[in-house]
Image (tube, rainbow, N blue to C red; front, top):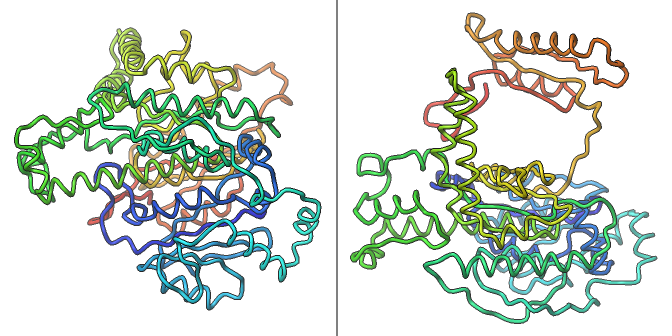
Length: 527
């Protein structure tokens, strides 16, 4: 949205490898406190001069969102400001303050600097409040010719600083499973009535009760709000997963590298692989003694850091849409073997292929039904729900009144691994609407050697599909059909790949190639 406040969080250069279970960059593991602060600040200038009801209405429509930019500190000088986005708030800590101060001193544009350290150019993080945002906006408007914004503010009567908060009968549980819903409520001016720690439990019932209770409060508040446009996401279904290789790994002294593979470490890793409940169970008489082991401490620290980043991203999306988050138990991630069987069957050529695929699919859906608590189903099965699935497991196959979730409701998904991809897809703050005509031009970038046996396979498949479509629609009115044009470009290196992309203005690009993996690199690349 125009006049969004851009919240920039530089982090120290990533010299550590990605986190071991979900694959987050090490820099993302350190920004949790900053995100929590931002989510109680306005998304844009207009929110400062609106009522809570109007703010919620716009967020529910998906027309606005937080502009949060985590960035490696070495790229901070690449940040550019424009008349449409003149408001920039940068957070820093002891590892990034020098780079931020240099950026501010070299930039003529006014920047709001918030730091955990004493700084001549900044405000102390612990002292930072919404009043500082308001004062900063006023200072920028004194020197910037933002005529349309001046006109809007002249007609505004409300100011966020003057609005009272509404108390609600929901207590803060101090647990990550309910935190996104609690933050979404507080972000829109609702004040929780008190604190009530959610204790660890050997069953999922207390967690499910707390999650559904907080979700129902949001549903009720949404009913009281008049939408200013079509509804955006109204419910988020999620369960964190680990990287695929971890589930496939046979945990043993030989396979566990980089850690002291003690008996306790191996036991913990096996329990994480098989985890079905919110609480991790490790049954061992010697387990308490092992908590002092460096490798055990590292494992739990890594799990905790990943859980914070994961919850942080969910909280951002929950605030962007004022949508409740239903955290599913980890048991949904235990259907990997069934999914592997389904994939193998789909790729096979057995005479009973379709029968076997249907059998496996039914087994998967039955397991999903057995895992998802009826209290969750009540939240899911509500009229006009628009659902975002954030999960590696196929929750969109969950049967809702004898139809898969993806057919019963408008449903889209974001994977939870690799972690960096999940994080950046989840915090995206703007919806992009494309007309149907944008899909008429398709770019296929191909990267094979001339003598590669599969170089022409996709081209041949496309030709067959186009010929069949032409025969099928021989007598169809051509004015009602898309005029699809396919452009093939062969590339052999990164420069040619970038040039092909830059010369294309359509909405669909397909890459056809093996990809590559450089030695000693932690990730693969296309060319």
